[in-house]
Length: 197
Length: 324
Image (cartoon, rainbow over all chains, first blue to last red; front, top):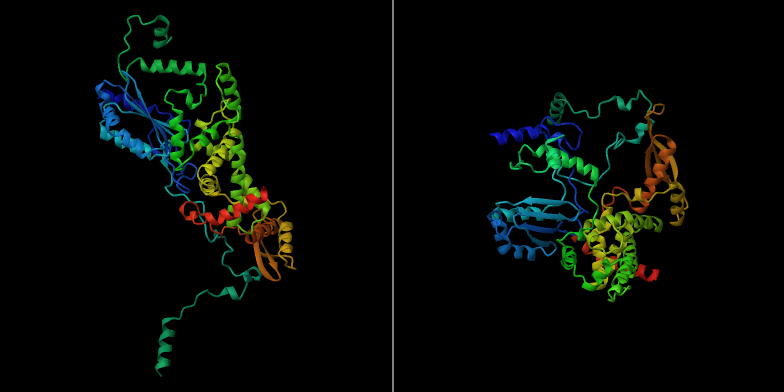
């Protein structure tokens, strides 16, 4: 219960990075957000895995890094073979917390404390890191983006209007009448009657 | 004086720093560290190779594999060596009496790569926009091979960690020349067409979302239009006629002017005054003549573009021979 109380106070003291005010509530509007984008139009030409290198830091003895040790013994070589474009470094650090440090092509990093993580959990996290672009995780404003929003041209008040309207003198007899005049029901019945006769 | 400042001054005299993430001493300690960091200033910028988890051989191997290319190892390493580094390394190794070849640098490769790059982009633009004149093609080539944009590409591919230079932080010129050198290395390692596809995937994609008419700034569109019409052999000059106008005496006036060639519609443009509208109509006419308007399809990339690589290569060969 005590731990929960102090977490609540730290939320209230949060200072929004986007706006220089203290956010009173954790709303999506008070947090930074961005449109979806790619690194150098990745995928348009060819797909380049954005993960540049991964560093595994772990203790060789402590039980909390058992999961990462099992991963290194069993799954690491397969990962390295499948992703030859990702450089893998191993840094055994005695009596330190086990961590994964991922570096991306756009210069950003991600550290993950893998204290007491199981081998399967690590695999999933590594897959997440491998498929990331490397930007800060913020709310995405729109999940679509196009550089050619208009194909036929944006509508303006003169689109599809006959140019004879430009030289029209108002009040005009042509434009006084309604555009579409449908036949009334009476007229239709009279027509039918005339036809049959 | 705060809790932690007293601790720093007097030392650990009976104080216990146990507690975990919500311990009492953490908040004043972090305040002190923040103030000290502000006084000390930011960490100095270091190149990635300064940290212990760095292996140049693996990084170079991974660079080639990441881009899905088979580079020749010597050429790739040579492409990363800047001439300034070669000179400094030679002098360093001379003291230890070891040999170092100064000519193992990327100066020649960079020149070669620049020629390949520019000629390929010219060939590509000639293929997709055949009616665009040489002026326009050069403007787009300059835009794509700009130092800024080339260095931005280098930084986002992973070249910035691998380039060996004397100075740090690495200048944009160096990054641009190393990217050119890599293109030349790829062309020599595999084939010129592979280098073309590399340029297509990384450099020409910077055209996505860009309008060629914004890149190539024409000062006198009506004059250029008349020149183009004369060249194409038409004996008529365009006549400007007012098509639409609204709010003529208001601050938000709109005039739409159309250009007519031999009483046939050529183009139209709109503007706040009649002169602006006429200029915009001339620009629209140029777009229609050169084929760079909104209605032309954007250049395809990726697998869709691969089938055109042979045709573009034949145009590239003509450019290459003419330049030499």
